[in-house]
Amino acid sequence: MSINTVACTVKPAVTLQLGDAKADTSRPGVYVIDVTLPIGQTVNIQDISFKNYYTAYLTVRLLRRSDEGAARWATCLTNHCLMPSPHTEEGAQDYCSIYRHQMLIKPDNVASVRLILRQPSSSWLSFSIEDIKIHPCLNKEPEIDIPGWLSDLTHVDQRPDIQGIPDPQMVSSSIQQMWALTEVMQTNQSTASIGRFDVDGCYDIDLLSFT
Image (cartoon, rainbow, N blue to C red; front, side, top):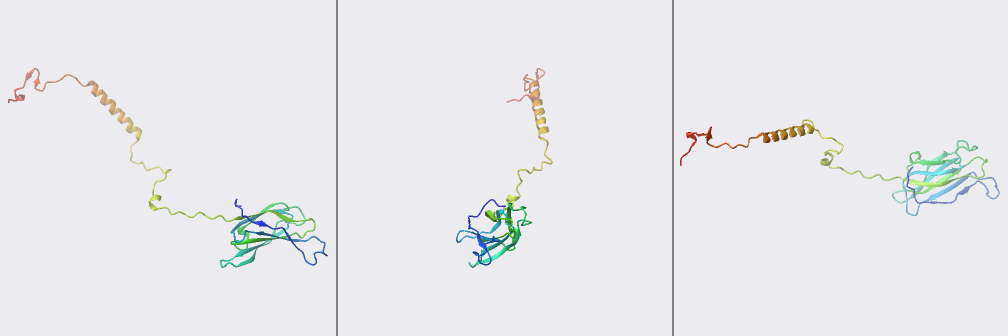
């Protein structure tokens, strides 16, 4: 059931009774309840919800407006059973919903809803339905076209291909070993200076240059 509800007016129930209503004192077996929308407004119905009060059967008619503006009544549900047995309590006070897929016609561009209630049993002093709500179809969000270059980007949760890349820990260990070896070599390096032409305390004649 949809959370949103349509702003509407539920009119008092009207009695349908055959013959002279004044002379016939028997309890009426049919009531009609009209539910109207504000003037000029229509709705695409997703479902109709209500609380039953001893109504055995329900018929639903819709006043639909065409694209040309003309309005016509059409029956979308006929003698829907609300109480499996009109003479027993089962289903007498249940919460009910009539969904779009249960209706005989598409409940679109609806300006008014007429609920026809029937109770053939004389076991109950009165019957009705309460807390009537109309829920509209929710508009689907338009689909957004995603550019090809954006869809080709790597998702955040998608791990990149690291095949062929050396293990970072191994690289770090090798660098540390090279650094330590360099330090050792610098420490052990002799600080004694060697003369450029001094070989065993003598000068090599071939290494001398005359100016």
